[in-house]
Length: 483
Image (cartoon, rainbow, N blue to C red; front, side, top):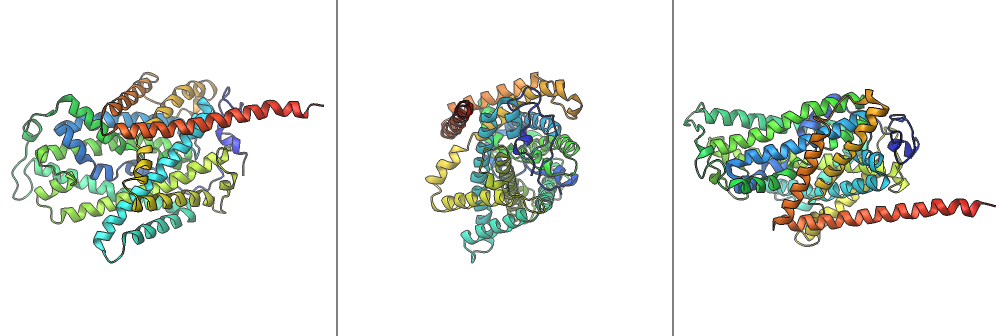
């Protein structure tokens, strides 16, 4: 085990000294290949939020949902590029938590690390419950709680065994999701041009008919952004996983480069097909717009097919969140921000105690979701509703500070660079601030923002108290020991 503080070694004038960048390697075992990271980068953000949740965005924006996804996707691409730049220069299992500590101090690394861990273990409960509901519909004899238990045990076992198990699960999950989207895009284009049997060309009339391209104006587009921006969460895990690849620097750079444009293509392309094939008013509340389109062009068992895809997407997210949460809490323990007992690593380099700690809280979250979905768990879910934006904002601020430091101390490590630095980074920060303001003005999103702000303030307060206590201990120590 290396010095826990070495992982967060700053560059030059950072808060913890002047250890050289990249002087230490992670004690975690390698095993993730380039193909794992590439598919994780592509499939990590393709989840139930796209396949099902996109219907809410179409309902408020109409065909303008395409613009909503362009705006939200551009923001997500900028965040991924910033994160990729830092992670390629400084691979670490704590990813942006380590970067925040290097850039801003221990309070920032502590705060963003614990907030992100809490976000993952709470969302994990939503994914486990959603997958269990689908499985229960296929096999009603098995109760929903039993399905949850099965999923949690399977993925806990996979994450405890070896990191390559996580990589293989995610590789095939992502492959299926990408295949489903590509097949949907192909079928949609055939329907638009009238190539499919017994179908008339859809043309482009639905884009401008039924109230026009922006039936609810720009206000609808902005509301659409609020509805879809959080669907891009999950892109962060690829930079966490890069620390356990055979070549972290090149692996994360390649994964980010290959992912950013393709993700935007999948999201925006899907929405463009959906609102072109059918009038936006044809979408049904609570139904997947993908199912509605596939039904309309005569794909047999469209609902069953999409249920399978959503089921896989939920299990994929569950697996990724368990992995990401365990590595984040392990990194916090490395830097003295979590119990040292979590630093125990197996012979294969797996932080088993960190995995068990994360899955234990995940089980608690699942129980709360099953027993009190409209009270206790709802408060927890609201408390993490806007945390992703806070995490993204800290990523941007960290990149602003670390980019200058890397250019000065180790410019050869900038193998991946943020576009139009620093202007695009500042633009991304402004966009995040605008989304937060919009959430505050939206009746539906305001409770999430306020609860998330409260959770963030609590974590920041704890971080401040810890630093104050440690400073006092540091000042009093020499006085006590002085003869």
